Length: 135
Image (cartoon, rainbow, N blue to C red; front, side, top):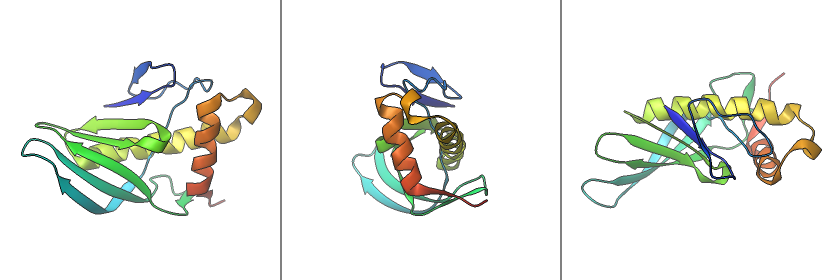
């Protein structure tokens, strides 16, 4: 299950609401990690997404996902895109983020910048730095 946080502070469950005067998102798989143990109950780590699930696109550079492990779940977040997800394991979280990243990228590319709000414009620019179209 994932949540997408919008600039109007609303939280939407599962698939992002594609209201682009606010925002939404999708993400990739991991290969490497960097752990920072902060307590016995909470672990902070970084995972690097190197590949998107949708092979129509490729990454120009890895996307960092910050992870925090709580007692019974993992929480993954891509702060620069204001996107996060949680699940039973890292793979579940990364898969959901991967799907949401791709959907957001496709939706933002299909829209004229004049129709986008402040954050979606920023996210579109960031995603263009990370993702290239393989067509």
